[in-house]
Image 1 (cartoon, helix red, strand yellow):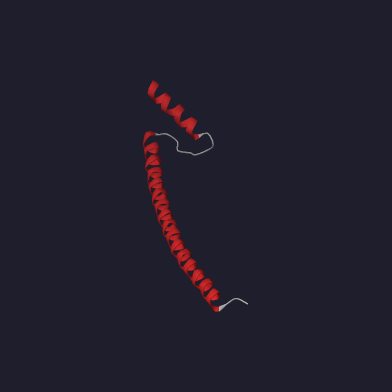
Image 2 (cartoon, rainbow, N blue to C red):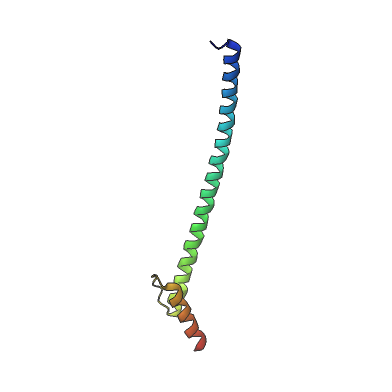
Length: 84
């Protein structure tokens, strides 16, 4: 059998480790919440920029349809505008 002293030492070690893990978990959760908040803010900014870009395209008479080749079509329209 395990003596009471060894049992107490093991119990104390487990308690210390558990508190350490709880602190580490709290830090990880806080970092996760901060990253999610930053991601949400970035997404909101990108949405605003997208709306502004579409409005600018509409004002310039450029179709703002998004499809698989949209970057190339946008470059083609820009090049045509430069040549004109």
